[in-house]
Image 1 (cartoon, rainbow, N blue to C red):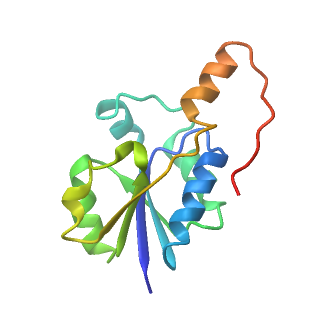
Image 2 (cartoon, rainbow, N blue to C red):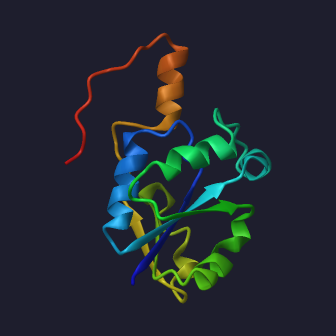
Length: 140
């Protein structure tokens, strides 16, 4: 069985997240999502989430591509996670290109292209500016 591992906050879950998770899962048989805890987001990523950890976890549990969700407590846990969960492939969006190459001795590292037309930051901005949605075309 080929195990894939990815990390993220996954706040305001949207089709860009789903598309990333589906492409990550397509690289193997079992997808592990390491979900950033609230304290880690605030203290290390300098982010406040709309949904708390448990709410974001429940949303991810409903995504058919996700097999296991574990908490992300610190930046340094990646090597331990890869070894503990026997991950074969580490996947992140290409906005992180090169930043996780240090993991290559432990597993394959893949950077997937982001979905250009969507981001949580953009959703927040659109809503803050009175936007109510837009017509989009889902990636194929």
